[in-house]
Amino acid sequence: QVQLVESGGRLVQAGGSLRLSCAASGRTFNIYTMGWFRQAPGKEREFVAGISWRGGRTNYADSVKGRFTISRDNAENTLYLQMSSLKPEDTAVYYCAADRSPGIATMAGNYDYWGQGTQVTVSS
Image (tube, rainbow, N blue to C red; front, top):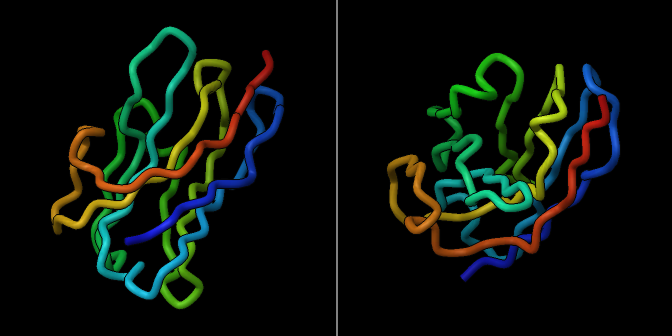
């Protein structure tokens, strides 16, 4: 089992940058595929980015491709999401999630463990 705690969310102006972190507890962080999801008020939780357990493969939602970068440090049990060129439509609660399966799933239901979320607000 793994516990996940996100941090780094805050209010930022449009065009700005932000880095989210997700600290994982447990000795088996490096066997999980990891993902970032987000949920805006009144909307369903949506896939943002995912990364394989060794970090060699990544996948991004079209809406963030070229602006966001997912990475992981298995030695530090930490997942990151570097966000740049932020837009007001990026405003949401951002969640990290862990999946015991090897593929990078884009459906929230495929992920086994979730953090509590961190709020990102982008002002225009």
